[in-house]
Length: 362
Length: 113
Image 1 (cartoon, each protein chain N blue to C red):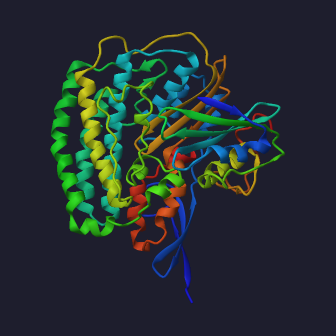
Image 2: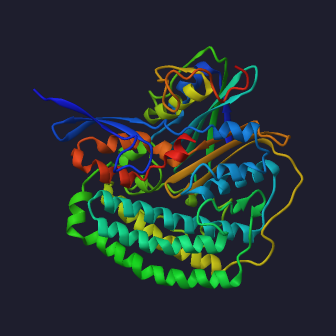
Image 3: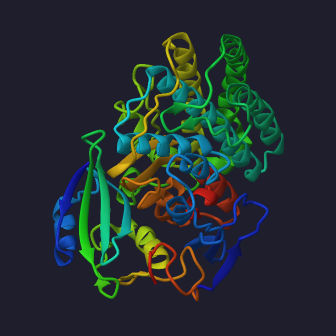
């Protein structure tokens, strides 16, 4: 007769960066059931955005939802407010939003990859990936003025223009980053030790990923063609600047690594195209209108589809703001990914999921 | 955004007729406190029609038991559990205590409690 063990992982655990709790039920070493608890850091941000802050201030508040994808929240909200105000922003501001979104994606993906390496027992690769990631952090600081919480997108455009010397610095540093990323792809693709911890581990099929409405690299690694950058040309000119969707078929930790690594190359290409084709003109559009009606915005954050809904009532305060983070959408798929795997594989699976509880609980 | 208004008792059937897991992506469920009632919203995108978002909307009273769509969209349990905590509504089979403590009293996103 099988003996089942309930093993708690988190809310504070060596393999978790986030306050997330799992109850893993195991049959000997094999995980047979999972319960997830994500409710440790609810901060009431949606409520605050409709009661404490005026609609123009909200872009700065939603930027505090997350330290990793802050610019995704500020951009999604700014686009939402612009829809409610019926405000068209300058093309230069759209290009600059893309620039910072892609720099942000580079640092976020590299953070995830480094933690997958660490949780797979490859400490040296963790340190190397984090060291290479530093280039993207320096560039974010140069472009936005901050390493985190950039407050770059604002209602009507962006908060600061790109100076020509900074643009040249971005191109130069990306040239330095490219061979480093090529080396990382080689290691993640071919290292034998890493393959034992990543290949065939934490796999989800294409059908399950679709059935459970997975988003982001997790879905694309299973072959689901879902990337909001492909759907929202009306808001930002993604295809003009060279966006291409990256898909893998394995659905496992290794496939998720490969999607993120290849997306680094796509992001670098997009940034180069943005700088080379940056239109002249202002970076912000002004209006004295007040938000009216309801609207939604979807934006591809580093972890997948970010969704903002707002309802305005022609006052300075919104009637309702709803934020749905990609980690939130991926919880059902994530729970399934554990099942059938060895308990020892749980840390690598968790890291490859790239959870963000700050975004999820808000 | 395409908006489809429905009476609450038809929501599960209509979403069931509309939703195909290999064609539609369930985004999230939302609720808006309108003062005298609560508007429930279910958002979907379409893999085949980039950029298109469909919203099903139904009004309800906070005391009603709201039918769950998990029988047609299994992954919706997460969004339903969140709204039970934050909006203080009752959804069929949805558990309390997902984003707040189980014994938390009140509903933070309601205007008047």
